[in-house]
Amino acid sequence: MNYKIMLLLFLFFPSFLIAGGDGSHAIHFSYLWIIPFVGILLSIAIFPLINEHFWHKNFGKISAFWALLFAFPFFISFGYGTLYHFTHALLLEYVPFIVLLFALFTISGGIVLRGNFVGTPGLNLVFLFVGTLLASWMGTTGAAMLLIRPLIRANKWRENKIHIIIFFIFLVANIGGSLTPLGDPPLFIGFLKGVDFFWTTKYMFLPMLFVSSILMILFYFIDNYYYNKELSNKPPNQAVNFSIQGKINFILLFGVIASVILSGFYKDDLGFVSIFDNDLRISFLLRDLVLFSLAIISYKITSIDLRKENGFTWFPIMEVAKLFAGIFITVIPALSILGENKEAFSTLTPNIYFWLTGSLSGFLDNAPTYLVFFNAAGADPNN
Image (cartoon, rainbow, N blue to C red; front, side, top):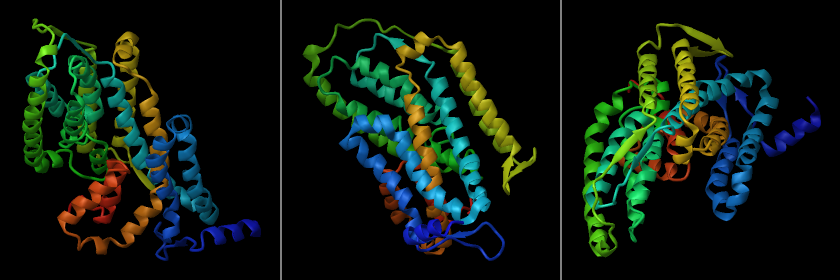
């Protein structure tokens, strides 16, 4: 290796990586190695606020910059030995994560709910209730895509409607997805790590029901208050007619649910494929192939006009794919450091975990936050 490159690496990364002495793939990082991870998080938090146009044109380049800032010195230091860690982050975590999102996003984007809805407190509550129920089975993204536009159209005549969207975000886009790995990406990451598919259904159903009930009751009283102030603007009463277009996609969604559940049941029965010492379950590979195929089938058989009516574009999933590729790479040293210090986290109380995870997911996103604290807690789904 060129001595000038070595000198630069020692200057900018003074605590070099040291391979684990037990012959394993353990890596010991200094805290300086998490700078790219912090950098990509700050970029996501700050750039859209100070220059939204620049961000939308360059978010992929920004993500790649931080990923390469970590990956290049990492590879220079350890050569092909680093491929284990890159393969683990990308093939075992990132690819399944993004394939599931891609499938749910594409299939849900082909379902259109039409109707001459008028936004009353009762009807709005029905929207929130149905969306909360659907979110755990078609994903928070899918449920939001299905219902947000009809909800906005129904309340177009309302003067005070910001609270409707806020509660929609609380219930449909977040809390509603807490019961299955299909509902929210972090739960799917847990599923990939060995958490049972119905674990959250079993342990989170009552807390989810409790919190959702409080929010729905609170929403109804708030919405009713504003509704009574706006009755003079209400459109004339008429019979509600609604229809669902693109219903074939519900069958494809069922295929997504079935393939994910079956991959969990048969995860150890079909064997493994080893790539750079990473064992990829064949059942998981087949699941990802099925999910990708279902998404392509949905796109091919669904009218493009329906997708346009739904406001469907590829931009959201492209943004997620590019940003999370950078996040899953740069988070490698952070996860390693947490794994080495997991004993310290064992002393934390549930209340502290609650506030730490909530604070981090507020600007990082809940999927990487789940991954971080899953490793901090010991990365053992059986405990």
